Image 1: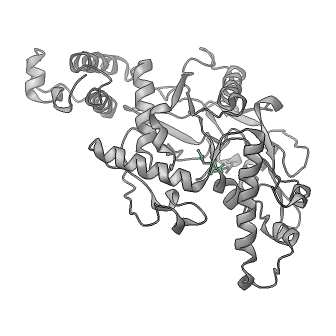
Image 2: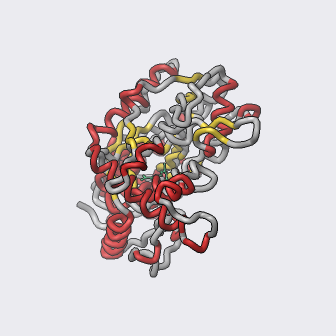
Image 3: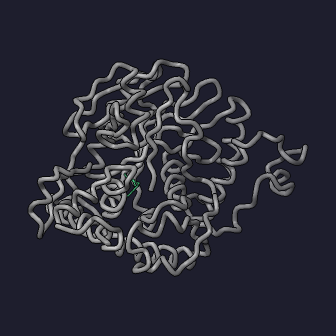
Amino acid sequence: MTSAGAFAPLSSPSASAQRGDALGDPPDLGPVATEAEALLRQLASEGHLLSEAAEQRVRGVRAEVAGTGRYRQTAEELLQGSRIAWRNNPQCVGKFYWKALEVRDCREAGGAAGDEGDLFEALVEHLRLSWNGGRIRLLLSVFAPDEPGRRGPRVWNGQLIRYAGYRRQDGSVLGDPETVRLTEAVQQLGWRGRGTEWDVLPLVIQWPGREPRFFELPPDAVPEVRITHPDHPWLEQLGLRWHAFPTISNQVLELGGLRYPLAPFSAWYTCTEIGARNLSDTNRYDKLPAVARGMGLDTSRDRTLWRDRALLELIAAVLHSYDLAGISIIDHHFATKQFVRHEEREQKNGRGCPADWSAIVPATSGSTTPVWQRRYEPTRQRPNFSPHPELCWQPASCPSGGATG
Ligand code: ARG
């Protein structure tokens, strides 16, 4: 393969002279070409492209960008670049597996007409492939990028699978409070949920400048887990459940000067995300009081540590239930140990490990994990995934529906 230094930057005078550019520096083609060049150079330095091939490719990309303002990435650029984007993302504790990310090329989905129904089918297929019978795959599907004159498609949903949140008259919420605004926006489009605590939201697909369309997910694309506890049979009566795996759909993939606004990313869960956040945060499902009552704890004072005890049993229940159902899930001790191994491996390869400490340390038992004592820099490097700057294109119906670590 090739070493980091072997591929001279083509914007340097020597490189431009080499390729017979009599005028010296090539004309400034703007950030697309510059970013593309940086990505190609990085791919070459990491051994995914021979240096000569990379030089040739840079020339090709420059010509393409000069003519059309855009360029088309090769399947290999998309694959390797997306893996690096994951590696660069400071929010993810699971980056140890960055090289195992599978990338599905959905850039043509929807055809020339951009048919939303076809996009929906491709998203459903993404869910089925990620599910993989319970052995959850690390899967990214990449849809059409923004282009001059035509921005790429988006979904309003923060994750492809999420539960509705219905605001009641008295201000309380039935379902997931995280999605109240999204739920209202979807209702304005004409959607009617069943009105339960666990209604899966439809997907809202929109091309900028076009009407949004919503689609109900078929049940087989939405595997869920009923939460039971190994030692507390009563916990089943609480009727708790969660979807089998997360699929983040509100991040833009920024790759080599291109922006892919729809690039859903699936992975397995860490048990604390569900037990110590989704089901227990007071501004989410807020189930700790119910768990504590079942355990017979004294909830009259914080000082009895009823929240802490209930939290631990809820996390144990999540882990137990996913294991029982044969669905991939990891615990926070394993996750953070792997993260430290990743960090060490990156160091050996001469790279840093951009990370946001508050996202890497698990929501509970932080000090019992090896990341607690370490310090991280959340440096932004490209390629990367970044949250959508705006939630949708129509402020009147702008939903929330954030998916956070
Ligand atoms: N915390 C989010 C959720 O509970 C998911 C974020 C991504 N997590 C992951 N394991 N890939 O739904």
